[in-house]
Image (cartoon, rainbow, N blue to C red; front, side, top):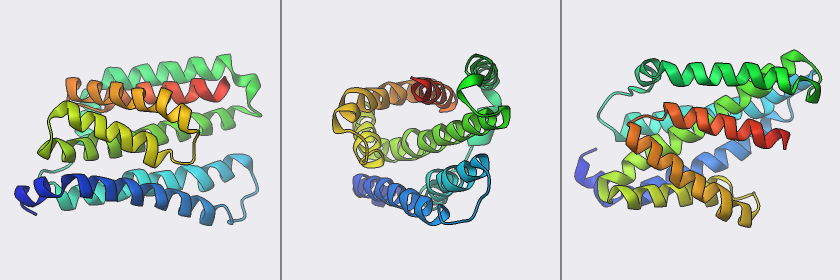
Length: 203
């Protein structure tokens, strides 16, 4: 696909990816929810984590391979940002120690931390890596950040409270977009996003 085509339809493609990812996530969560799983940990992994991986990472990665001529440098990027991975590991350990009583078992804490890391990874990859870069082909960077934040807040989180989306997720989308652009990486936004999700879970 040449750049002129991407430039012309950037907004339409971005909206389509956002809507289809959100729909796929909901659909897979419903479908996987019918699978017989005996443990709470297994139920969370099958019913929530796997649909997230498919809809917010594998599908967007497929879109990226079709839309972007460059190869995906995400894993190399994460390897270079070892400090961010270290921060996440340290936070996860402290989180598990501080809030172990809130969960039924240590394995459950590990599944929760893993799940919300995957959620953050998928959302950041989709909105701050793929969609933001796609929009940036046509629009100025600050416009692309705002549009991607709108999609993140009001399409992906359409089932959430509208006021919370406006007052929390939309500004968060802008901040994360700015961090991703400034650092040319989503490594730090994945860490920040995971920390935010885990803190909200306890509050």
